[in-house]
Image (cartoon, rainbow, N blue to C red):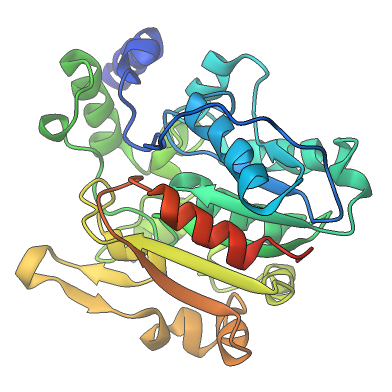
Length: 322
């Protein structure tokens, strides 16, 4: 009963809660004339928590891409045509159903469905969701995947109310349901961040109840061979970690690292020392051995991306018809 009351509060106050969302793109805004599509592979963009497909920051990406490398078709992933509903879907929904919906959406989009392949970029939680697209459907196939500050190894802490500008009542309700009922079927099928929560010190609960992350990371006893084979098809997989990220805990999740503890007491197991890599559950070792897996740093806090860095990514990853 207590959980249900908290849930009602969350639904009722979602709009005010995302006034300054923690995963929204912090980019410069100016008007750029859009260009026509061309020989280059289309770029698919998946935004982060609290953002929407039609926000100024997300739309800027497509405009800046065209200015930087020339005519390129871009498509912003959306779970609803109404921006406010799309924003709400970053907080609430079943990720299994959401990924399936996006797979169908991309497969029927008039330009994307005729493309020989697509490029993809995911911001914060959108990065692991874009990777899930690669693993679960990949039609049309992704050639180059770039993720910024994503939670590939999950989060071990939820957003702290003292560290954000949310409505205090909403944030307290949000924290309450996440911290007390993380592994309940109710939360795992309805609250998006809970579905990529991962406590390295409680793997039993995680493997038994995770609705999303344990599956897409192939961490359960029975491995999905298709996930591995689809990841191996990538021409490149570039993962950016924000140097001063305090929003994502642990920030090293952007690299698939495993972190136990906090601060100076933290024990970090690098991806290459994890079974995920050594036994190649996902095909990451295969990509690495073919120089297709890349670890890079983005200076600054979470989702603080400079125009210069964007230009570098666009020119190196998406130019020349790649």
